[in-house]
Figure 1: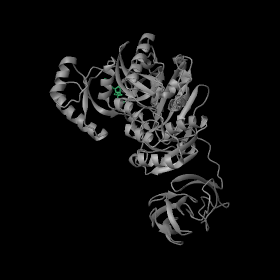
Figure 2 (figure 1 turned 120 degrees about the horizontal axis):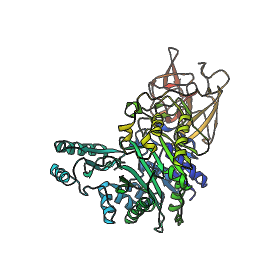
Figure 3 (figure 1 turned 90 degrees about the vertical axis):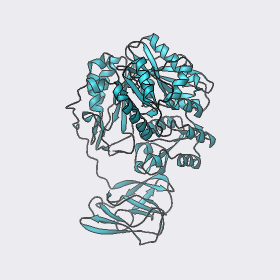
Figure 4 (figure 1 turned 180 degrees about the vertical axis):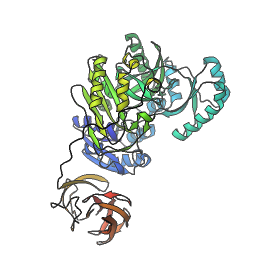
Length: 577
Ligand code: ADP
């Protein structure tokens, strides 16, 4: 294998690209229109625009992604997590197109694809699920019967749910009818499928999951467990490996159960089997995730294995030899989301104005952002992950606290402040926390979302970088402006001198803003043919309207502005070819 297209964005696309480069692969990024300047684009060898901001038009646009893979001669596709990662139809199409799919066989994705099907598969090989049904529930009487047998509370769960969504808790008989209707409606709205099933709702469980990996020869390996008990809204917030105070017996039993589930669905590649642990030793199958997990780095730090590299190796048919992988020390991952913990973790997308990562021995940051980046409401608000390693859990907690305090993120509230409280919490420190402890036990008022010491101002320079797209492929372009013309408002009378890093050809078709200002009107549409001198847009600056005209005639291959945008001097407004 010599090249790979990473069909994702954000921190996971960056993380996969890094390993792919270390393996000597040519890396191809894809991006939506609002991700042109995203970090995952910057770190890849080349990058292609796959559509508009809404995921349905870009990161879920299977046709376009496979099209780019074929056009660029990519040999493989790595889906990351989310988006198309657990879409068996996409996996099958990738394989049918003659590309290598860095993930499990489509049939395994299907068998584990919904919670009911996966519960059946697990039950068939003797792995016990949370007490519940393995059929969709339609009638309130079925819920009543279940309550008579197992008692309250009961969880009504969307069979196709995910991301902590689609679960309703019923605590008494009078709630059943309404809850069932609402759960089905919600399941339909979020996941396009109304199927709901029942589980006993465990009040104070821990979430323990097993990392497994199977090679193409069918050998399966258990790479230790992760504890993902610290959650908000039933979504993971902080993860660690190994799980605190888990006996070797329970650990081994969890590993065996996970491998049995993997074998049962003919698994290949890296996957995760999730369990809920009740008390010290009763564990129940919850679901299987047929992909790389957000929290995979904690396993990497305690095993010394690069899971993404292993994923590539499995896809290439390499037989793995991971029979005796020792787990060393302790790792903790803090998810850094653009959310305000003081307001019930309300999502708070926005521009990051200041950004400085922590460092030091045992500190790893997997980030998808930099200063100036925007955490967009279009996508998951996970901005970065801080992962630490230390010889013991206690030392890892101390290191996590230090590194979290050193992490400077300005402009948006983040979950970092909540992490400091979790790391100080007594239940957490004793390893006696449970899945809702953040919401039930933690005082998250008066959080310090204050900004840290200011970063040094960026030095002013007369060099400007811009990105252009030619036929959908992204290129970085450096431009130099005559002294004194930047930010000051003096109009640039002719197009700036351009040095293209690969686009080649004539540069006369790049339309730039002559001065800083606001776009009040756009006179053209992308794809249109324009003539030299045609008006492209009206730019208002210093209360004056300036017409920006086409410097050459040709096809408008890229239009980067819309009314209301503010642009700086030299910004690329459009490209004509
Ligand atoms: P998702 O696919 O949305 O992540 P999961 O079924 O994996 O949903 O569950 C996510 C979290 O929801 C669990 O870690 C746990 O906190 C909670 N949860 C799910 N099922 C139950 C249950 N039966 N009892 C108690 N908590 C549950």
